[in-house]
Image (cartoon, rainbow, N blue to C red; front, side, top):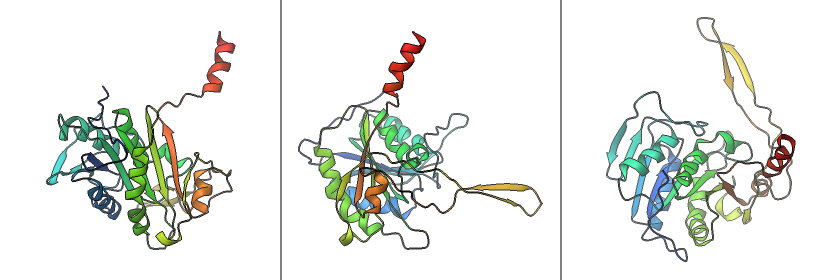
Length: 266
């Protein structure tokens, strides 16, 4: 059953909020440490419940065929041997007890979560689980370029004020925010753009090889080249050096097809 946040943010004030942080890169990742610093600028009541190890591309996977263990690392900081979805569910329904968070922040992810990335992103899934439980939730990702140093300072410098502004806005029911920071230094960011989810021509790389025993294995994924996209997409915004903010919804119903199918099937 969904649980509702106990406080409202009003005009964007955050000092009294209980904030839950999670991610899919693991509890020791530099991104979650940067996001924790951001959250501590917003509120004194910050909790971190994140995967013990990296769970990238775990999507909404929920562990149901084995026990899930929670390990306390420090006050208000816990590692979970499960998925990002496990982490948020356990945090809200168990770890934080009868005082659930008012805000879920997932990230900072090491790499983008644009276009079809949203479907398999563990970062977005953690925020989605927060939304399912009735809590305002945001997924935050720092876009990277392979072989270059990750510009965590860009996300860390822009996020505090951006989060405050987003919390001050009106949100639709069962929604969440997907935020991507461009791979440029903070001083070169061209602005903040509210975007739609883009589309790529999906051409995932599958590499075939053999292990030392001669058995074949396959490696999914590799370098990706962004394709041209429509003007208001997240891909276009990031390509222009802007922060992309995409409002997402939990309801995946295709409304136009719903009406046409009703006509076909009576």
